[in-house]
Image (tube, rainbow over all chains, first blue to last red; front, side, top):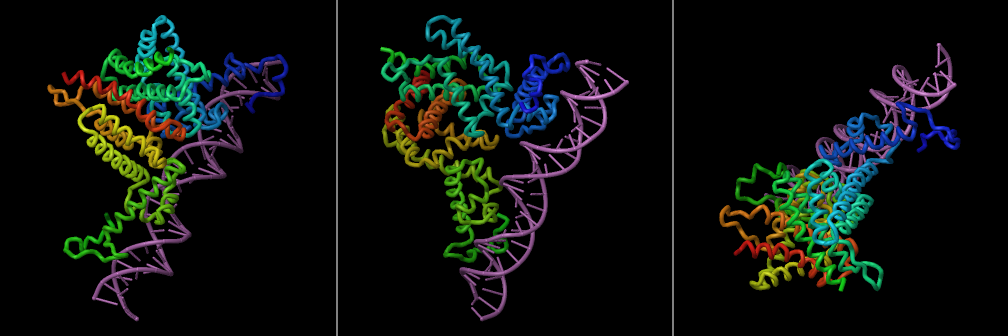
Length: 220
Length: 220
DNA sequence: CAGAATTGACAATCATTATTGTCAGATAAC
DNA sequence: GTTATCTGACAATAATGATTGTCAATTCTG
């Protein structure tokens, strides 16, 4: 941000063009290239062994641009994670919506999309299943948040009428459900997809049904 | 090992006593002190920020003795993990055995012991729930192994008569079950035990029942 | 007590990588 | 073509912590 020419920002005139893009476009392009490179490199060697230098080389950019877009390594990990997971969650939501109103059918559709994408893209899969664990409190918080979204897509929450909030038991139920699904995914991915998608979906769904049934009971 | 006086090892004569202990006793005592100190320090600041120096200070030993007992930091983490988890598994097995023959009752007893210990010992709990994730392939393998043992205690495996092995689906089921229980434990611990033990046990058990039911079906 | 083994304190080395800084060459605007 | 801006390569700095080495003090044996 410090690099932007603040002198001319206020005027309506665009910044100087390079390769047909103005300054801001170039910056966001570089940012995206770094995120893609990060996913690639994390997928190869893991976050912990991924040096800033290696990521920059993969992105065909120099360290200078790394620090233009990210405060530090961890910020890039978080950005990459949100990039991958945000997109996946959008797709899952769409798949669930397309499956109609039946909770079972929606669950099945969302899970099928999830495991299908996991199989199609092993490297991003690695990023958000493996690399994200135990880095720092900040990263943990991001992961926790994503878990909540994931859970809400699979089994839409039933709000406690009294408190306008979900109860403590419901929180543990979705935690368990997400933990089960992620663990299954993790093993499936790291064993290089031994079972067909449908089989894995069926097993994952059986754990989701625990939360689903509890939600139904709470509805009454 | 290189420090042991090999010249006199072969003879039946004990090594020189210090503080009433012979050389080997002193070594294993130091090793244990290091493991205890590691659990303490990991519990305070986390594995990642735990320096060798800090652990040695907590153990009231110097770095020299660290490298006498462990090749590196990671080796100590693994030893500490196995120490904690091994003991816990023994207790769980005993609790299950004491509960008789009913699968449900055994499951309930094992889970109750598990969550009770978690609450009694927050620091060791941290070590094997949090600190163990994503350190290295070697550590992951240790964790995977412990997961298998944990699963077998909760829901004893039904072996496939044909292959003398559990099927692929059964593996994913136990993975999911363990993932659910661990995730629930993780959140419960990190939120400082908001619910009573029985409630948490009940929720965890509902996920275990998925695997239990599947095992029963396979039995027929 | 004399001598050997053992211990504790601490310095020295070594390795790794993030982060900042410099500068020459490339590119666009006028 | 000239100048200001932007870019890429790479060096310099800094910080951290693991690992090894040294040496004097302590504790045992005979």
